[in-house]
Image (tube, rainbow, N blue to C red; front, side, top):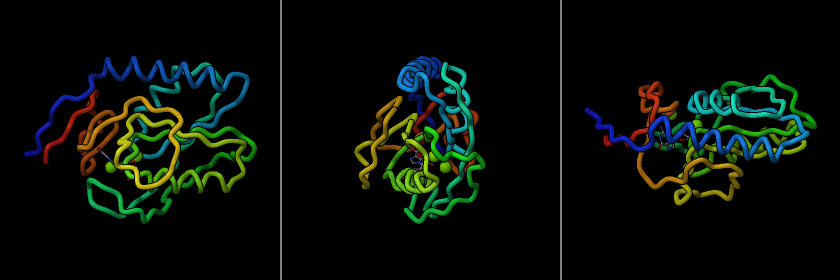
Length: 172
Ligand code: 5GP
Ligand code: MG
Ligand code: MG
């Protein structure tokens, strides 16, 4: 049986999400924002984040499949659900649960830029900074984390544990 060790409580996360939302609201004051959530992992983070934003926002989702193992991505990425919003000349903020090698987010940044938005930035709940193998800039990060596999608050292992309110280390 996989073993779960508590890492971040729901209370910790709530405070941090509110804080990052204040920063985003202040940076985008007077502008309109399109948030693009990366399915499925970002669904809970995005739903909490949007309710703290004080600028006008539209929301949409994209889904990317990366063929790899359960615990790491391969870098071969395909889009399995496309955005439905016209983001041309709009400010786009991509919402991701966790950035590891950066391959997924790097691919999605380039993909979304191809629609001609005014800007594209990235907001991630978790950033495994030391594992980065590509040169992507993450504009808003809630937590920089070490190696190890995390689940809960939207993050899965084999589609399980997304419903846990807090975040846990999973020992396989
Ligand atoms: P990257 O392309 O940056 O290597 O991988 C990013 C994706 O891998 C994330 O969106 C997530 O789906 C998955 N991933 C990377 N690290 C973790 C982790 O610690 N826990 C979970 N649940 N998924 C992870
Ligand atoms: Mg993800
Ligand atoms: Mg996953």
